[in-house]
Every structure is written in C-alpha cells, then in structure tokens.
Length: 124
Length: 284
Image (cartoon, rainbow over all chains, first blue to last red; front, side, top):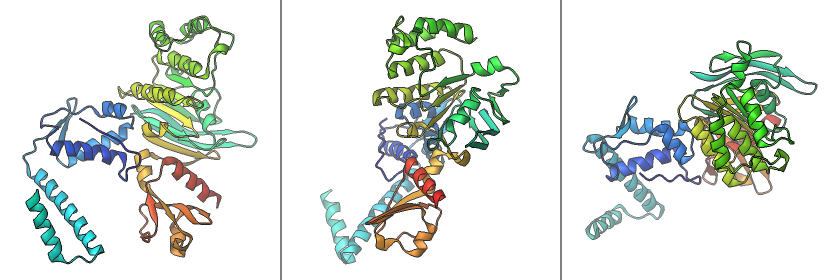
C-alpha cells in the first residue's frame, strides 16, 4: 500500500488517505481480503492524528470498500459488487462534466464534443 | 474513557486570571493546548502537574485525583518543560539514582536503553549538555516510567527538525496502545499540528474553543481577494479581516451561506491561520 500526503492539496488529509486507498482497491493493487494496517499504526506511520485515520477508515467502511471487525482489523472487501460499478460510473460522470464545462468556456458545440469523444475512444 | 479530566480550574494572579477551564482527553489521543504567550498555557499545565495549586476546580488522571493518592498521581504523569529541570551540577548517573528513589514505577533498564540509543554521557554534568541532549534526557526519564499522561510545555522549542520529527514519533508510539494520552502546549504549531487529535485554544485565561482538529480545519475557509471584492455583505460574514493596500485575507465559516464571488481565492487554512484570524476578530 502506498499513501502520499500533500499539505498543498485541496483535500483534507483524511480524504487524501481515503481516496488513495480507494484508488488502490479499485485498480486491484489491494486485493480483496487484504488486511489493512491498524488505525493507530497507520497514524503513526504517516505522522497524522488518530482521528484522521479513523475518519478515513470509517468513510471507506460506509462506502462498502472495507469491513472492520473488532479486534481483527480492517479488510478489503470483494470488488465484484454494485457499489464498485456505481463508483466507476460516478467517476465517468465527473470527468464528462468537467469536459462539458470546459467546452462551455469556449462555446464548443455539443456535436464537436461528441466527435472528440468518438475519436478519442477509437485511438484508445 | 477520559484519561485526563480537568474541571473548572481557576487561578488568580495580580494581572492574570485563569478562568474556569474545563476539558478532557480520551485515552489514546493527543491534545494541543495552544495560545499566545501569556494566555495561560503554562498555568494550566502546572496545575495538572501539581507544580502549583488551583484556587478551585479538580483534575483527575486515569480516574485518580491528587487528593486520593498524591504519589500515584504524580507517578502517572511524565512532564517535559521548555528547559531542563534537573540540577545543572549533577551527572546523568546521579539523576538516574534520584529517579529510582522518587518514582515507584521507574525501570532502570529502560532508561539505560534510551541512554544508549541517544548516546547520553554518564559522567558529564548536565550544564555541559546541549539543548537537544537535555530534551532527550527528560524523555528518557519519563519514558522509563509507567506513566499515563505526557505533559509537554513548549518542549520542542529550539530543537532542530530531525529531533522534532523524532519527538513526533515518540509521542505517537506513546499513545499507540490506546491507553495513554499526551497534552502539549505550544505557541508555534508547525509539526506538532499534524499529530494532534484535539485542539484547545486559550486566550487571556479563557477558553476560546476546544474541538477535534479535523472538525476545526473543516469549519473554516481562508478567503483572499482584491480591495474591490470586499463588499459589505461579504465583510459582514468575514472573521478576523486583515486588509492591506492590495487586498484582504480573512476566514469564512464553511457553514456560511454567502457565496464567495469569482475573483476570490479560497483555500484550506492551517490551524495557525485560523487562530490568527480568531485573535484578530476578538480584538475588533
């Protein structure tokens, strides 16, 4: 597991930790069943407060990425579920929204944006 | 469970009153006790460590108050100040002997491990120790006892970055079993800010706020803009407004519904910036 904290980031530290763990679950670097470091262990390693790492873990748990069992630590949950697909769809939407907003800034017509998407799709 | 419970403590001096201070730290967490010079940080800490007595109020550590058992109470606290409290003429070996007699839970072999790790000389007088060595000696002596609460009064002042980082790690190791807590005071947050779970902010002997650090950081936005951006409705919402010839800087509560106009720069404030603007706001 790799986590890099930036003091310049727009995101609060708990969110940076959460997003980076999420990313690694989504791209498979953290396989399901992986035991995550303890909240206190992680806080110590990253030199952040315990409340910060607890918040990151409880958010990940609420979003269905990990499960925490008393005394057994937190483990990564299986990737084959709807929550994950939902997460991906949300990301696609966010990306598209950015593209649409940017297109609006230079008054790019809708059709041209569509053509761009098609072209990029083919070259991928 | 709360490891440290401070209830309604007061203390009067000629030009200063510590005014009914209450707070608690749950076991396994770190609190930063912050404020300007002369705000009452050391007075509070000295009451907790029983260097001075409060005029009223109570303090309990791990459920135990001073009156119940003064020796056990003192043994639960590890105190590190901004200057060494050991007699300058003594050597480390002599100090070790005193610690053994004074504190029931002192473990000489743990002390020896720290002495070795930090290369502290046995026979040199304390007055010949550098500032860093004196701090290490204080840490070695408190960490070799079975304490529950570490109290640090401006302990990292004047230390180099490597030593400060080492202290951060020590403090996090100290609380890692979830049974012990740390209370540190400082007027320069810098690195200690990262590891604090809670922030207590004191000004002129009074509590300004006490909250989890993350909550506090999320409660405010730092707003900057040019002179023309400073409209009346915005001015009304800003906290601790600081104006210069080319623009302004202030805090905005993140719950505030006013929408910052496009030219404004908004950023996440540091704890230092939050405190600075809160102090400015209170001076208005």
